[in-house]
Length: 110
Image (cartoon, rainbow, N blue to C red):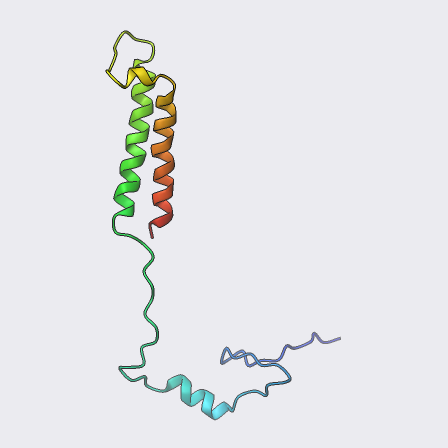
């Protein structure tokens, strides 16, 4: 028993169904090697990345990591940093917020 062969011309990359007949082979070969004009460059790619996304991603990750490391380092000592030591456990939330922002910037980076 032979396997069913799907409709389409695999050499040209063109698929067709029974409703649409295969394209003329001469036109297909001619179009494949036809020289394109200067105006026929096609659509321009859309840039979705941002130039500042990677530096901000790294900066937020480093700041968040440093924030958490400083919190754990001074939490069991007599050293107090005004404003920082008063936050208590919220320092973990702030540090994780910076790290979460770094992941957000990673989504914008190409």
